[in-house]
Length: 241
Image (cartoon, rainbow, N blue to C red; front, side, top):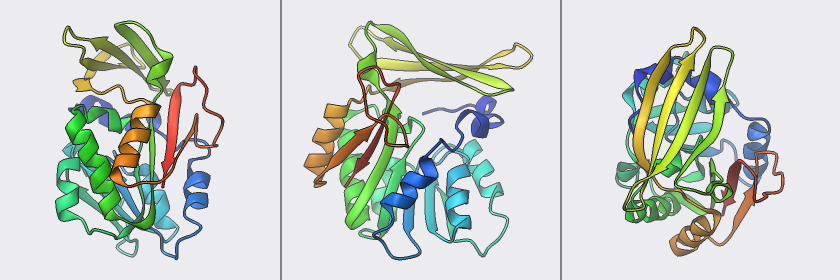
């Protein structure tokens, strides 16, 4: 995925820590000893990862977009926190990170859908399973694509006081989907963010990928508060173990 510098200034505002997110992670980590070992994939600017580290957890975060990674590294104000950011892609993580080490892995803020190739998506789930301890968990959040019909549709806009992120999904002749995003700033300027191929991952596909990778259970919700997932829910939050 190509994220332009246009979004970096507004990233924390447009992708904040969601309501219920810290509580869900805390509940899902209760069975592990302290410090909990987290792996955050495509961590963005590291806002949530920094919060986890300030609570004494051991956090490893990877991000392949250098502009976002630079913002993430600026958060490391003290060397006492166990917080490490690496410029790394999902293709590389299985080779360079320790197998059987992490308690909880996550990929949030819709970043999973940018793994558009089905083979690479299957590899992602397999690699995550190998990186986790035996009873480790994967937490992810994606748009609920089953809510939409048609070859062109818009995902819910993300908005802050200073900016609004618009996301439009189009379908090409071969059936592949593309996500076109732009930011409208407070002064009315429209700035391009990304135009990239995506995969409209569904609940059933996640269940299948999780099973084939060796996970035994997948739970689905509409938000981090574990609200019931409905057909018209905007978001899918999955806890896979």
